[in-house]
Length: 337
Image (cartoon, helix red, strand yellow):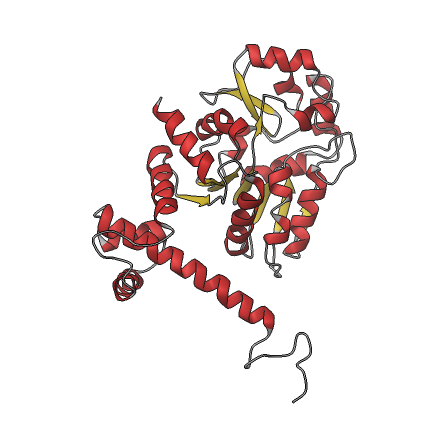
């Protein structure tokens, strides 16, 4: 018997098709466990669960029956996903989210970015649809989602970079991320060809009014979704390396209560923008525009970002939060304190 060549069908399926089936089964398992948790633990009705999960009531009935048949439901729900689902539901209730996605960690001290990036990439693979206009931020977490997003061709799909460029050339750059994200879905990419921060409000106004940026800001008024991450103020390393923030400015922001930044907008733990010139000199779409998008995806995590994430819950009011399990626990504890 000859050897099967790479890429040839195996039992009627290609390797890629087999991989897609595994991913699909994993998502189905997760949805079934969420439904069982809501029904048996939270005592929600089948209609209420259907509304939350965005599926029909008949699907909920079928999933609950399958959960019982698999012995996943006895006195408690027996699954390795139990603690993750509990954290997700606690985040959803506490912060008024439509959906929380929590990535498990093999070690509480592990770098959470790879896990969060993988979880985000898989979510985006399903969430992005033809006809959408998506505004995107930047950062290490977002850049690391790219390998986990399943490429597909979407029609009438647009990606708008919400921030000007950084001065130091590197792969973690707003323009680079927006362009590559658009390419994954064979969509159109719209970039903001300016520095991330300018020297004055007058310069900012001039760039917007005289250099063709009105189109970008106008598009930002009608976004279907925004994809964002937050940065912590403890180091503000990316911001500093770009040459935009002096140590004296960082200390001044800290003194005024800043806990993090979203698109270089610095804010406090209550989600209010701090009183500092940098917030009026930044070349990025303002928070009020971002909050108009019906889908607001925030993906971030790490111990140094706990306060930044808590502040962002009020600042941007995300509809979707993607984080890791340790960050989820810290957020819940921090909100309660």
